Amino acid sequence: MDTVLKSLKLSLTFSNFFLFFIYSRCCFTDLSKLIMRLDQALADKITDTFNFSDLKKVTEIEPEALSKLTKYAYNHLNFKSLLVLDLEVATILSKYDGSISLDKLSELKASCAEQLGKHKGELSLNGIRTLDENIAIHLSKHKKNTFFNNLHLNGLLRINPATADALSNFKGKLFLHGVKETDPVVLNKLVSKTCSLSLQQIDSLSKTFCESLVGTKVKGSLHLDSVRQVDPLAAESLTKVKGGVSLNCLLKINSELAKPLAKITKTLSLDGINSLDENTAFELFKTK
Image (cartoon, rainbow, N blue to C red; front, side):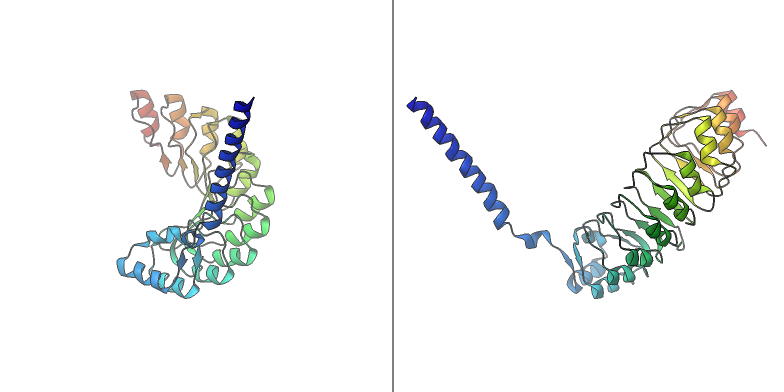
């Protein structure tokens, strides 16, 4: 009995020591090491070395320092550790001509979204999990620079009809790689005007799904690069896509599928195909 009690006391003593150790580590950790500010000194270092990778660690931004960096166009301002965006910083970013990543932001104020909607180039907001109609209206105004107009919202898991309507006015390529609730009618709202759409959660294309997705026509392009199987009847609907179709995860096609795919009038991307038999190649590339 005495042996058991001694073992129990020893166990409790060790547990208390372990808890105290964890508590002390939490209390006495130098929190300053977790904070990295974009100040004039860091901005000077970045512009001197032309190494923008340090921005990934930045958690706070001094507006004056940011203004200095935005004078260097076409670089990637990747603020992957920034948790909060204020209006002054958003206003400065709106004037930058290049790529901006703010993937740690989980929410966006309407005033900041309005400013980001004025930005030109590529904007990544992959930390946003929900998007209401008002924010979507502002983001849909995002503009093209000399090279591209890309808007990444890959953190969204679903999209409602009102938000889809708002984003449909976006005149660029919209990335929704996280959307899993793929109601084709809602997705059609996105692509019925000028928006090009990239999805990554669709494994196969059925006739019914494609008919609802495409509707009467799609003015932009469709990038369905997770699709591994396509019904030939579904491919008939894809011929209504005016901006081109990307099916880069397809590993093989036959002549039956090649016939409708050949009718796609603009770009058809099939990067996953390594070989074609003679009949399939004939159908895919024959003169129209």
